[in-house]
Amino acid sequence: MFFNSNSCPYCGSKECKESGKYNTMQNGERKLFRCTDCGQVFSETKGTFIEKLRKPIDFVIKVLKSRSEGSSFNATCRVFEISKNTLLNWERKFADMKDVIFLYCLANQFLSQIIEGDEVYTKINKNVPAEDSQGWTIILMERASRFIWVMDCGEHEKTLFLNALEILVQVIEQTEELSLITDGERRYGKILFEICYDLLKTGKPGRPPKVLPKNVKVRIKNKGDSNRETEKPRPKYEAPCREHPETEQNISESDIHANHVEAFNGSLRRRNSAYRRKTNTYAKSKTGLQRTLDLGWIVHNFIRVHWTTKQVPAVALGIIDAGLSWVDVLKMRMPSFV
Image (cartoon, rainbow, N blue to C red):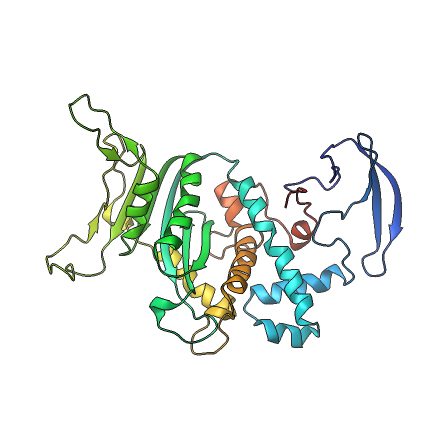
C-alpha cells in the first residue's frame, strides 16, 4: 500500500500506538491509534475513502466495480437502489486518489518505454459536430505493460495535447529511453518538441539547433498516401521533429503503430457507458466524463489484470510488486493536502 494506514494523518509521524477499538454497524471492529509526537487520536480509517462510510465495504465495491465494467450512472443507481448523490460522492472520492497515486508512479525510474498515443471521441451534453465536442479523450499507453500514463478529455485543440504532453515530459525525466508512436496525428511531435527540447552545441557559428532530448524519439505512421494541402506523396513512416544525433535508432517500421491503444479504445467503449456507440448515454458534462476516466485509470492500472499480459499494468511496469485489491485502494490513506 502506498501510504501507511498507521501513520499519523495530522503530522505524518509513524510513531503511533494502538489506544483502543470501537465497533461499527456495518463494517465490524476498527482500531484507534494515538500519535506519540502530536498526541492526536485517530481511527485506522481516518483520511481514507471509507471514513464515515455507513454502507458495507463489499456493497460499495460492487457498485464501483459495476460502474467500471460499463453500467451507466442512472442504471447503477436503480439496480443497487442508491441515490444519485451517494454514487456521485463515491465516484468523486475514488477518482480524487488518482493525482496522488500518479505522483507515486513518477517516483520510480524506468529503463525504456514505448508510448502509444491515440484519441477516442464521445458526445457531451448534446449532439454537436465532432470538432466542437469536449468529449475528445487523449490516451498515452505504455506498450509492453499496457500502463496508461494519460487519459484526459477536452476539446480537440492544442490545449488538450499540451496538457497531456506536459505530463509525458515528467515521465521522460524518469525514463532513460522513451519512444512516442502515433497514427497520423502530427501535433504529438510538434507540441512535445515545443516544451521538451535540447540545444545541440556543435561548435559551429550561429544559433545551436533545437533537438529532442537524447534517447527521446517520436514516430508517426501516416494513414494517407499524400498531403491534402500539397497533394505530394509522403512517407508511410516518419519522424516529425529533429532528434538528438546520439539517439539510438532502434525502432523498426513494423513497430510503428498504435494497435494496442486502439484496442484499448474499443475496450473503453464497452467499459465506460459515455463512449458507447449508437446510444444516448453520453456524458452530461466534461467534469463528469473526466471523473469516470480517473476511476477507470485507477482500476485499469492497479486493480484489473490485463487479459493479454496476465498482469496488472502497474506490476508489469515495475511500479508495484503486486496488484492492489479494491479494499487496498479504499483503505489507502491520502496525505492531508489532498
